[in-house]
Length: 316
Image 1 (cartoon, rainbow, N blue to C red):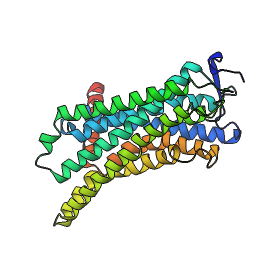
Image 2: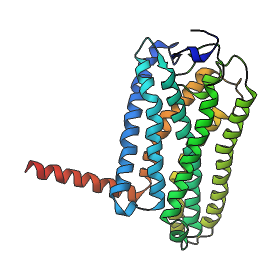
Image 3: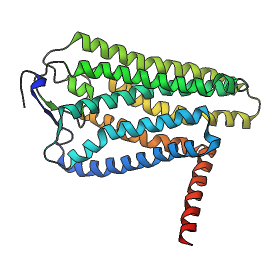
């Protein structure tokens, strides 16, 4: 399990939750259930934004991208976790680890940027409603979504390529996935270049988008408070409450993972936070957007009604 250089190894051992064998079956059921709900909820959101013409708007274009990211993010790590929770040999091949690390970083980084883009969309919708169709036209929305994907993909490629080149003195990862911070703990020596890259990217993709989101909501809140009627204020706030809830959940977990000192806390706590960050947040996103959104509820009912009608006609 030990050697002088990572390049001589073809696989990693994943520690996961093997120190708590009785907990593994509980985690398996929990993770499987959350994963299936994530796939169902986010796939449904993507489906209705495609088939329902009323949802062909910038907000739902971004929401469809967010749902696709959540599916990719969870699918990058949860299937491996489920297999390892039931297996005595918790291993992953080197190429699989590289792909898993890259996809997790790419989807997470892209989501950070996209949430800031969605905050700007809500700012324009509430603060400049008459100019909204002009400012947020389809071409602009596609460009903003593309920038989010390109930014996340390139930063993830940079982090992954440097992280996997650092010489390591072991191949036992104290995590349930090839999470970059857990992999970097295997390094024989600290790399100033890698630390700098991680710090710069973390600042660019966490505090900077968070600052832009906060600025957007300061203007949104000031605009809402100037609305004379209580009904108007309630309607305006309801259009951005779901996004704000997702932002708090997502950035709360991300900031606690990537901007805390590396020596603080327990690795077991890091694993729990990572599991909640990787499973619970993607599962809750479609639920949050559906609960307070009449358009989404109506679209789901419409799709389900069509499916039921088709099945009824087939049986007649």
